[in-house]
Structure formats: C-alpha cells, structure tokens
Amino acid sequence: MPDYILAIDQGTTGSTALLVGHDLAVLGRCTVDFPQHYPQPGWVEHDPEEIWSSVRKAVLGLLQTTGVQTKRIAAIGITNQRETTLLWERSDGRPMANAIVWQCRRTQPLCDQLKAEGLEPIFRQQTGLVLDPYFSGTKLAWLLDNIPNLRPMAEAGQLAFGTIDTFLVWRLSGGQCHITDVSNASRTLMMGLTSCAWEKELIEALDIPSAVLPEIRPSSQIYATTQGLDFLPDGIPIAGVAGDQQAALFGQACFEAGQSKCTYGTGAFLLENTGNQPVASRHNLLTTVAWQIDGVTTYALEGSAFIAGAAVQWLRDGLGLINDAAAIESLARQVPDTGGVVFIPALTGLGAPHWRSESRGQISGLTRGTTAAHLARATLEGIALQVYDLIMAMAEDRGEPLSLLKVDGGAAQNNLLMQIQADLIERPVSRPHIVETTALGAAMLAGLAIGFWKDLEELSRSWQEDQVFQPSKDDVHRDSMLRLWQDAIRKL
Image 1 (tube, helix red, strand yellow):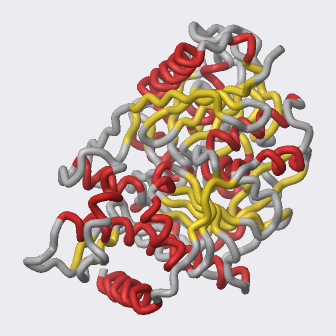
Image 2 (cartoon, helix red, strand yellow; image 1 turned 30 degrees about the vertical axis):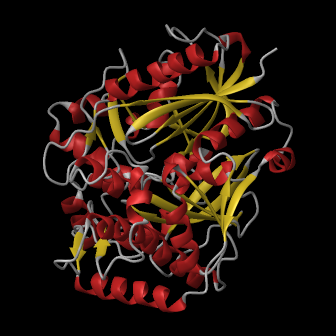
C-alpha cells in the first residue's frame, strides 16, 4: 500500500527530495546542490541538465538513505523556483540554452522599452505584476531574440517554454506532458489573473509565439505519470505543482483569507491569502494566484526581497567571515547591536515595495571599531528590515496590521533573526515544526489530488507549531534600527 508522497523541491541553489507521510511527518530528505553561472555582472544562469541531475541524485539519495521501496510512493508533488525560464526542443528534450534565473537583471532594457510604450498599466491590471526583469515573459523574449535560430524554431512549434516545474514534469513523464500550474503561470507576465489563461494582448506585446506555451492546469491534479526514468518506475502519478512561495503558503496551512507567511530562503517572500478575489496593491506589492483546487482559485498579495539567505552565503563565500551559514548566529550574538552599521542587501537590486532594479548592495556606518560580528548582525538586521518594509506595505493595502507571521525556510532556523523580526514588526513570529514548507505544500497538493488526504481540514489538524518568538519591549533599539535603515534607503 503506498504510504508516502515524494516531494521534489527544486530551488535556486539546490534540489531537495522528501518523503512525507499521512501525519505530515518527513521520513527523510536529501539535498543536492548545483552550480550557479554568472556570465556577466547582473546575469544569473542555470544549466538545465545540472538541475535535472541534481533532482535525480536527490531522489536516489533519499531512497537509499531511507530504504523506502518505490512501490510505497503514492504520488509526486513538485515545487520550484518560479520565474526561472528555459526553452527545450520538443523532439528530444534538449535545452536550447542555459536557463535565465529569476534573479537575473539582463532584461531591464526591454522592461524600460515596454514602460516607455505605455504598457505597464495593462500588464499591471491583467497580471497583478510590475514590469521588472524578475518575471518570466521578458526572459523568454530575450532568449528568442538573442540565441540564434530560436525564434523560427519556436514559431514552427519545435520548442517548448517552461518554468522549472514544466521542465520537470516533461522530463518525469518522458516528454508526454507540457503543462504548468496557475501559480507558476501567474508569474510570467502572460497569464490573466481572473481568466487563468494566456492573454493574447500580453503575449503579442512581448512578441511570444503561442506555440511554445504550456497548458495551464490547476495546482492539485493528476497531470501525468512517470515514464522512462532510470531512478523511478513507470506509473507514479505526478499530481501536485505550485511555485515555491505559493507552496509554502499552502504548506503553512494558510488556507483562510488574512493568513500570512514569510519564507526566508535565497530571498525573503511574504505572502498573504486574500481569498477568492484578487486584491490590487496600492503600495507596490504583487497580486498573484496562490493555488487552484477543484475549480476554485485562491489569490495572494506578495512582497519579495530578492536577497535574504543569499546575503549570508555572500558572507561565507565572498568574504570568508564564516565557515558555514549557521555560524552567523553565534558570530552576530557577540555584539548587542551593529554599532551603527547598516547593510542593505540589494545584491541583485531592490524588490518590493521599492522596485529599484538598478540598486546594489550597500554597507554604511563603518568605523575603526567595526568587527566581523557587527557586520554579521547588520546582515541579519538587513534581512529583517526588508521584510518589515513588506509587512508595512501589506498592512497599508489591507487596512489593518498583521496579527501573526508564520515563518519558514532555511534561514528561519536562525533564532536571532526570528527574534529581530518579531521585535521589528511588534507581532508574534510562529515557526512550524517542519520548516521545509515549500516541499510540504507540494506534497499536500499532490496528496489531495489522489485522496491521500481527504480535505484541507484534515491537513490543518496535522500542521504543528514549533516555537513562537514574542516581541520584546525595547522600543529605543527598534526605533534606532528603523531610523538608520530608512536613512540608508533614501541615500541608496
């Protein structure tokens, strides 16, 4: 009897495979990292074959370490880095170029051109997004216009476009299924928020041949079954797909309007469930599809900070201040404050609510007395302050303050960061028992599709809280942090 859901979490720096049981407990996990490629300043790429290899190795490693036989896998759920864009040949599945990663800023000139043509209000109204290099549509246009021979091949129907979810479903199904789910499609600048369909006006504005586009499907549905793989048998249902941040919202059991979560991964992503109607933001947040189940579409407001955990990786890999990411907490605890140091981690531009793609990271307030510990603490504060800006913008859009913030992601395991966050927003911060909620959400969506779980109520009962960080009363320190941060942002 199959008794586990296999969740594949394909992230920006690595791929993770998990086995999730009926009680939402994680039996085991395996993560395989893969290289990042930076061909020019501001450009970020992934090799699709390295992504696929990392997924294969993660699944094999998981099965080996847990000893679980593949016949016990009931279904597969997929969650993915969202806007990362690639094209492959339909005949043999061969990628035509490296994938352009969501962090990549190369399409800023095209975004500027579309704005100059007066098209941003149309994109904003129909998609809930802003014209920024972050999203997939301009990345796809760039590939077609800059890689030789791709546009005529695309127009002839020889190429398939996808975000990473689409690529993985294609590969897992032996090339039998070219689909994406509504949550990923809502990040392309090409899908209408209310229609949940590709919009001709937007596709034509971006000059995209419709022949390359996948079919848009719900987030919980049997799309295909595994076929022709050397690491999984044929016939396992591929039954749940959602972009990583929407999957995390689902994995946090934020099923009701007004419930919010923030994922601290490579970036930091705040999402709030707004129910069955899209809510337009007045404060530069995004309106996005959260998921679609049984014909009902759920929407969310989203604010994205492009750099969060990646700032800690930079301290480790770029500056050599720490040997591993977890060491930042003990280093930062060596000092009571930053000594006036402010770190704006805009290493790939500023996201919401500022949307300043030209901005770059800045460290200010350095003195002869500044130590590695001050810089470590300023890094944690910089992450938390970006999230504070997002929370304040969301409160303005909603007309009421946040009551509770659920948190997840790798950096959410940093207790000092979570305490700083609670102090800044003056609200409790709740961390779940399982912080890998992106993978958990994908598993939950797949399980619902095959009846592994009965309904959302059953899933809500199984969700478990691990720790709550209560805000402290040190308003002087909080006000000082905010003042220094806001001054630095104005000068950036």
